[in-house]
Each structure stands twice: as C-alpha cells, then as structure tokens.
Length: 149
Image (cartoon, rainbow, N blue to C red):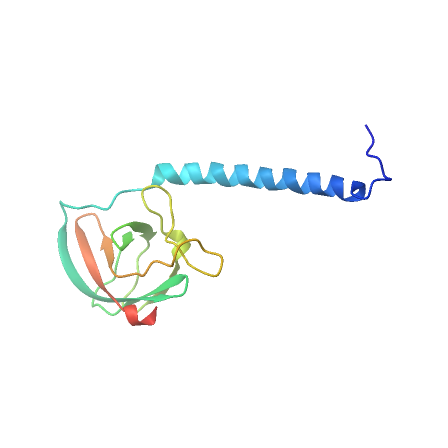
C-alpha cells in the first residue's frame, strides 16, 4: 500500500517509522547484553580472606578512577572492589605504575554500574569512599583520596 503524498506529514512518516524500528532493535540488543552481565556479577566477599592495608592511592577523576601503586610490591591480578559493591577485574599493576580505570567497567552483582550523575541523570554520582583488591587469599585495602571528587 502506498503512502499518500498529499498529506502534510506523509514525507516524514516513513523516516519516522524506520527510526522507530532502529531504536527498538538497539534497545533489544542492549537488553541482551545486560542479561549476559547479570549472570557474571559477584557479591562482595564478607569473610574468609586475610585483610591488610597497602600503600596504594585511588583518586576519582570524573567518570574514572586513577590507581597509583606506591607499594613495594606489584598488585594483582584480582578483583578491584569500589564501595564494597562494584567490582572489576584488575590485571597486574607494576610497582610505581599509574592506571586509569573507567567506572563503566565496574558492575555490581545485578549488572549495574555506579551512577555517574550529569545534567540528565536521575541519580547523583556515587562518591568513591573505599577501594579493595580481592586476590585468591587476601583483601588489600587502598587509600581513597576523596578530595579529588
């Protein structure tokens, strides 16, 4: 069936329908990716690990964190926890190395990332107040520099 061209909205109808279908397709792809992330999340380990503090600084910088290894040992590999809720895998960080990690890499056990704030955000950005590295046998606490937020 042909679209009548004498109507004032007819020339915009087809592009609008195409755009709507493309948006719906992108939304379905996002939901499929999100369901894969939901199954990969882990809960914060509350017991069973030896806990200690190491000389590593974590400084939030916008939508990233900057991790500086000033300890006398390389770090990782392991899982880096922020606020005892969001986690991301961390490769080996050499002595004296500075690593920038985007917050979108961190997920909670439900697949959610830390809220980032911004003009159109429905939630305020989450302040980073704790950072810990979970290795196979220990939990290493880092120093979080909150004045940088």
